[in-house]
Length: 364
Image (cartoon, rainbow, N blue to C red):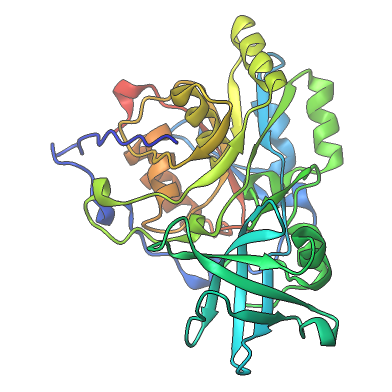
């Protein structure tokens, strides 16, 4: 488990606070549906102060043959489930993590929390074609905010049959067949995420073929994105914020691909902030697999990532802090002001930007 917080001083000589990462976002810029085609979304090239408006399928123009693109190959599970208590009270469950023995860790939304030992009837219960979930206790300990359940059958199979796509809270429609397809990358491989690695949603087969033809290498890591990615920062003092925990894995072939990229003088390009968090967690801990709570804020010393492809993030979010750490606080303010002025689409189904890492001495 890794945690990193190196508060850099603001230009005025004070530490950054939560208010520094706030901005006004017109609600109409929050994308409710994906672009008609994955690679037809917009791409803001922020590699220089003179910003360039592009289309995402132009990404190969920004890459070099010696570069390495690293993707998060996690697969979004249909983690949102509906059911009721024995009393008939309605509830909603969001599975955060699948454990051995048909057990899961989940959030529950219900008027009154059930007691350990209670049996919940999910999707109509066993008599209605659904299943049951027995509450075992809180997780990871008695004070934990999450709950541990034992399902009556294999969790992944039950979620696939009865679950709903766990769309983010700012998407207002219920999930549809379009969401089941488009809130998933074309290369999703390892089930376990309750939120998509959204920067990778812009890649389709044709674009990946163009990147391969260019000679740019590709590699993958896995980080199972948790619901905590939408958790707001509630303290103005950033050092008091506790990051949520997520499981990651960096396979041996990706470790080798990064070494090869360095040897040929290429750039390690992270596709999405989850890939950044995975690579930098590995760099600090030396562990290729495990849980991470890494918190990247201005002043962070990046060891792996040279450039980032990412969507536009929520005000006051930890992801705003991450991109400010990578590209510089002032530059990110400039980028976001341009994006709002030019009516870029924000958040999970929105547009993307290309952000090379700014040298540490220039990150203001």
